[in-house]
Image 1 (tube, rainbow, N blue to C red):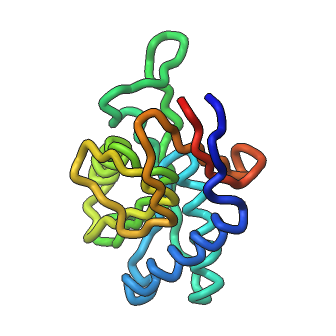
Image 2 (image 1 turned 90 degrees about the vertical axis):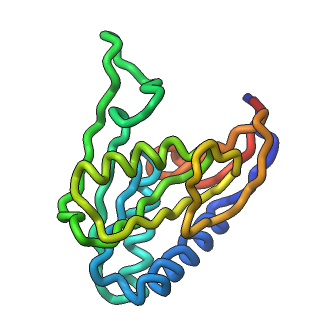
Length: 180
């Protein structure tokens, strides 16, 4: 896979997350009754960054959790040596029942990851509302799912792949388009 173009650098990611934080606050008229839930792996790091930005803006902290959708995937692509799915575990310390959950992921593509996350969330409780925030929306939806908050729309072909690198996981912040 070869890199075709860098579409977001560190500063662009920071600006996109700052804008999303403001949009979350504005749409929800503050952060009362809100919880940020990041989809593992990169979604949780984006959720933590958003929580920091929201706290700076609002002067109050917002609950953050992480959800593992492995067992809810319809493809179960990652497996261990004994052919069992590799489960990393969810960690949501806050009860999500009757709360507004803002689900966070790095890339929205077919919608299958978000569908799996919705199923996983509902198994943990019944939120009053679920909103979706993504750093990148690349199109090509297979399910009727759309994001409420988008860092950047990046139309791509099916022959391309969006690669999100985050400092916490990859040692740098950037979003690139790669050729498959």
